[in-house]
Length: 318
Image (cartoon, rainbow, N blue to C red; front, side, top):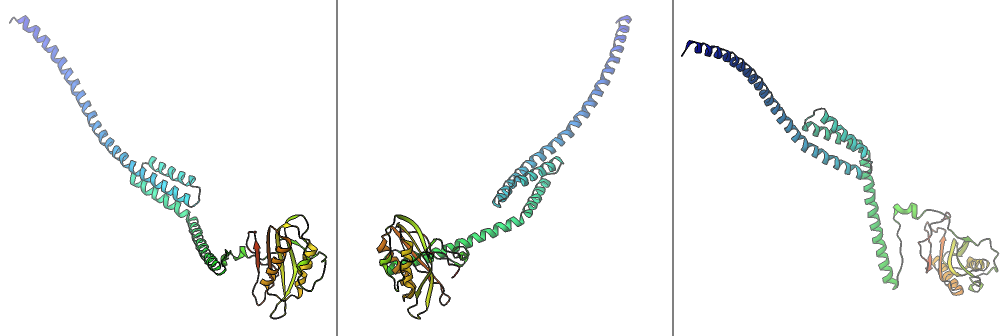
């Protein structure tokens, strides 16, 4: 090969060698940089995998906390409390824990702690609810016992009389309401001027020729005589009716006729009912007497036809 040609090739190779060396240096630097990036990406992958695992763990924990929150909400609703503030504070606490980097286990433990705190704050309400429930159970039992007694009385009464009877039982827990002492309602006739002063009950004195009426008449000074001891028996007599109006003065005179009449309490009420019913023919009639106690016992006869309602409450005089 000619020397000139060889010289030219050497020059070219020398230039190419310098360029190649430069390119290789750049390549090595790029490879080193790429390696660092790859290693960094590997660390980032590990971190990413750890974060992913954490997120996967937080999911079930949050679902568990959500279920716990729902259960707590339902429990507090049963206690009659307004639960929205309590549940909101629980949710906010959990959100704060998550934002602070707590692990799923820490979040769950925090939720349990907050739940117990909420229940502890409701201690008095829980005790109150249980007490109210116990009271309702007691009331239900008393109601069933009362119904059992009344049904027994109805069966026995019908079997003994051959007719339908009515019975009402007041257990001790109901005495304060059902048997409260108060004055009977009705229009008093004690201020009327009697048309006569008979020595014995006389139904012929009754005057029922007025218009139609629906009222209750009350005599507070009724008196009869005990047929055994001869002692006076004092009572308040209530006559409720619907039908021809009964003249006050005539009814007062008729009832005054019992002042010397020897009769048991029940017999007196029965006679008043029969006499008024026959003389006036009311659509409905109810006669009740509240006698003063004899031997510590209240005797309160009642006879009714076509009128509903229980017996009158004991009077203040009784």
